[in-house]
Figure 1 (cartoon, one colour):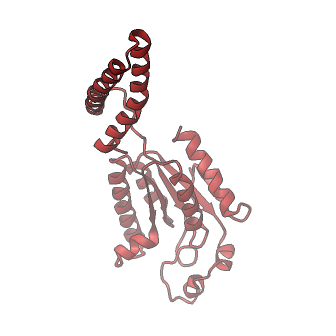
Figure 2 (cartoon, helix red, strand yellow; figure 1 turned 180 degrees about the horizontal axis):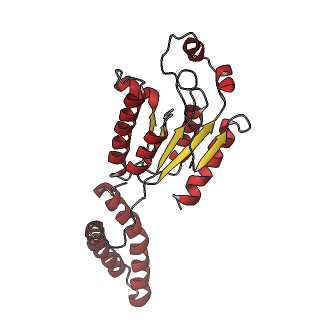
Figure 3 (tube, rainbow, N blue to C red; figure 1 turned 45 degrees about the vertical axis):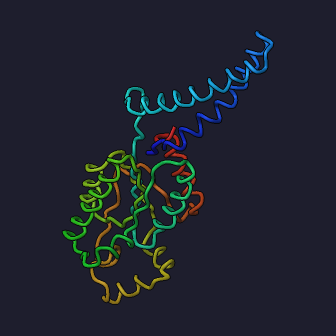
Length: 241
């Protein structure tokens, strides 16, 4: 949400008064034929009405009637590691920024850097997802929408997120394990296959596909730019009108 500053209110008043005062001067001159009287009337009107306009704006800022709250939404990107979640989410975030709405980007990598000791067992992952849900709740209370990307492999944790936050939109970034292995520039799949990484989703741990995803992006047939456009249009159609 954006608050009107005093400086902006005054600037709006001044620019409007240039137009209105000019009109007043012309009208007075036409009716009375005296330029000095027309200028004096215009000057007095300008000073008084700039002040009145500022006060009028401040009064209306305190009145809640007629205001429409921006309904925050949460785009929740889920999928196997290296499926393309972060790439697509970043592109969607860039597009949504152009709509000038309160928006934050949340990615699993950034959060785990802040909370480095979070484990990867089912219980620890589910507990971690509830923390993220609480964070999104807090942002939404301030009308801030979110673009979040997490593997979130378990249905119960995704269900918890849906329960906790408003307007949750699950985006399932679909790709099979073999495709993800080919994209593995980090070498994490290879390490997981060697047993060097425990509880790795898709190798030594399960990924439970979403049953009720609002959007499904098959990255084997849809490139990131096309995927971002599909999701962007969905948001514009359903949440930003």
